[in-house]
Length: 94
Length: 153
Image (cartoon, rainbow over all chains, first blue to last red; front, side, top):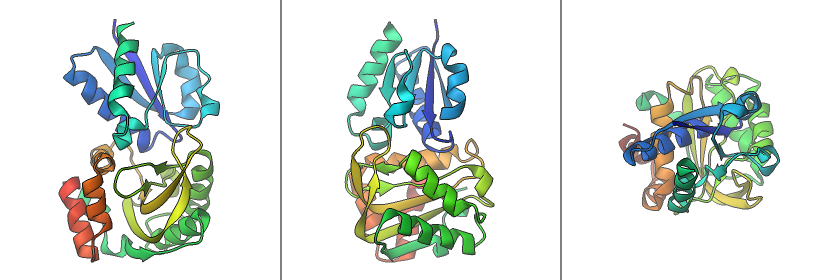
């Protein structure tokens, strides 16, 4: 089944869009069946039940969802990106 | 599209400020003077940076990319400022760490989806220390814009 990945940042303006597009491309390259969407943190709460994996770009207080979560920052800086992507792939495989 | 986002008058080669708030105020004022953003932009940028910091522990030059909601923006643009002395910003995400920023990309975004390609390309250099240093070491505005244009095209 297709996994739904949500990327959330403060306003859904710049960061989450970029990270979502990066993750989308990386998943596509690996032939993974996912949908990746960028949202703002305020709307996340109302759609969190549709979310399989959450990519977080905001501070810890907003991260208390009971779903698999990875950090989106490595996909911006490249620092630790492979590790974070491995984590994501494991969540997708679950 | 990238051509229209980078402008001579929005490039600062030798910028200094005592702290992040002073810096953000200064840079936002330039965008405001040129009519790219509304009066509300400055406060919105400062407030947003407090709640959702945008410092990045990038290789080469450390980057900060303050931005805020499209409602405060008239026309999309990217302001680029080289800092003569690093200015302390909080790191994006939940690390709680600080970043000594050398390079500021202040974004005025009107249509996130429409500018996605440009923003993605801009952020693609955040993982490339060599390119970031290249931008940071630019001696003239033209050189800096050229370097970025190569990436954003």
